[in-house]
Length: 292
Image (cartoon, rainbow, N blue to C red; front, top):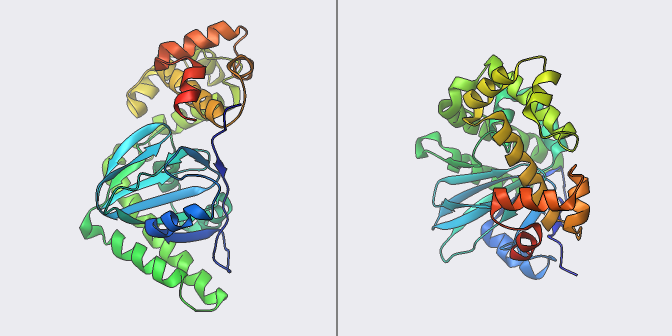
């Protein structure tokens, strides 16, 4: 039986676990002997994560895509995404881990558009090049220092929460500059509604017309929305969503491709195999072997 990809839950090493932790890449490397998985191999995270690289060059795997990273590169992941580090010589950085519950506690002080820009896995790239003038590096370093200092729990929570919100607003401003055309756009709202419908109904239908009907718009209008927001057709977005979900399930369980075919809403396993190979170049089994 193939070993399934590790599903990593949040477990802070800090005695005052508040749903957030910040560590260094060096800390994570040292923990390899204490944890049950190799962080350089694909693993799925059950929390959110910001990784700020401060020096060196390497790459970072996010949902089976490797992104080159260097100093002042930030990678962010939301709960459920697949992740893997690569510890090349000289690479350093900070990792901020936080739960959905922690993020929700900060929401009333954070812009909703920022949440969308940073933590929508399908909408934006997980990589941000951080400008030195933004002082994001300084705030991350300060957050690390305050998190691990000897202050009381009450003081620590207030200070770390405030620094997290400042850091988030700084990152949101960078993304706003990059994707400002999407803010308060009716097409973005409609696209997010479409994506939510897809998440709930992709096992029922992979037909773009089905979702257009549920949204009470035409198929042509849905395509215009997807082209504007994602620069892709509705059908291509649906296929990309389904394939990513299939990849995650393949490597995160011992499910066989025949069983997964039915889970994904295919009536015939052979149709699923053809669909998967057409979109990825791999059969489901060969893809699983390549990431085991």
